[in-house]
Length: 109
Image 1 (cartoon, rainbow, N blue to C red):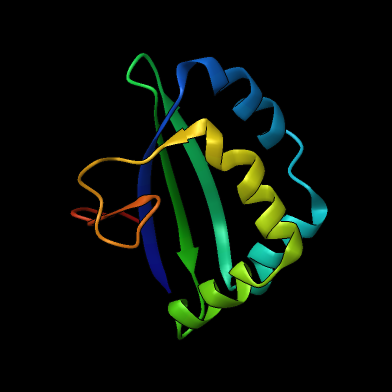
Image 2: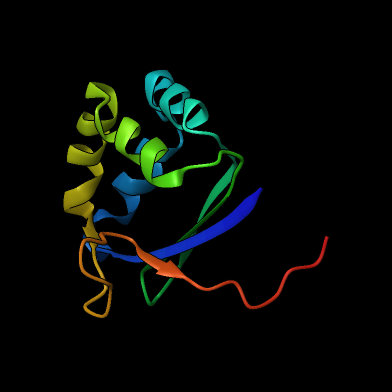
């Protein structure tokens, strides 16, 4: 199992909508995430900086392959089309990233 953390900005005017859609994530999207071996998934919001922090446990053996499979899902693509305009990627993210990957520096079970 690998813990993963990512961050991204969220537009101030979109926070209420972002919370609303995440209070009722589509079942098809939840299924795609689960089939991608992602468990214990949370997204946190930090205001007034308007930052989102996502963390999950990856229980697979090839995250790139599972992520590619997720991106093939029509439901997931529609979800990203809904949420993407609400987000503001960090200017320091790596090439090819939307959410910026973070390094885990501490963990306690």
